[in-house]
Image (cartoon, rainbow, N blue to C red):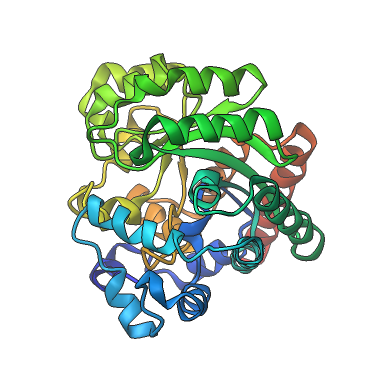
Length: 356
């Protein structure tokens, strides 16, 4: 929905063959938000049902609404869309439709960042919320072939009350699809260390730590996420390139960065795609995965992000397949699931090369 994306198209791969390869490449996505993945059609439908939320129902007005001036404006718009999710039926519809969009992109596995506090605090009972996402998850796997898992995310702007509620739902209710615990929202004015007790509780029951850090703040936020929150992956982490010691630490310990190029431009965290630090991360030996973050809001999808990565990193089909394998390797999918998806990627690549 970002109009200026048109001006970035020259950075996408100009090879129609490579675009076709990406479209069919089996993929995993590790950094993509639940409400932020609401398609324009679904947002418009919900906006028409809930006009008091102030979100436009007209597609053209919606496109204008989703043009952000800065990260704070993005958060404001994001929370307005959150307010459209009023009951368990809305939650179930949204979740299943996200999986349908993923299936169209050959996404086989996704760790969807879900913020239960946003819905529960607006009156959806926690049990009904969890039942809705779990029902959608099971249906998506059975009917669409998309395996979904959950990252339960603290909305940092809502303070420690939201952290307590998120930790309670994660550790006491523990839905079957839950694999990790995260922290999103603004970084400025929201120090990572204050959330340590909540991450400690989540990690104590076997969940993984995947906070956002270092997108709109400096490398010190990433260090805080590593030391205080015991991060196993870092969401965004674009500022890591400012600290050579941090890059070395990430590379040596194989701590991945979940990179979302278009998102970083849309939120003004990075000035332009030409200046995106992705290539610098890879040159330093850091393990990266490519993700879409809030795709409809940013006028992108995972296939588009792979095209951007192909251009920025100079990747051919085998290089893109290796990028897809990165996401599988550092995901929290079970061992058998990882093996199946790796095999599917390898088989797809081999078939592609035989016909070239």
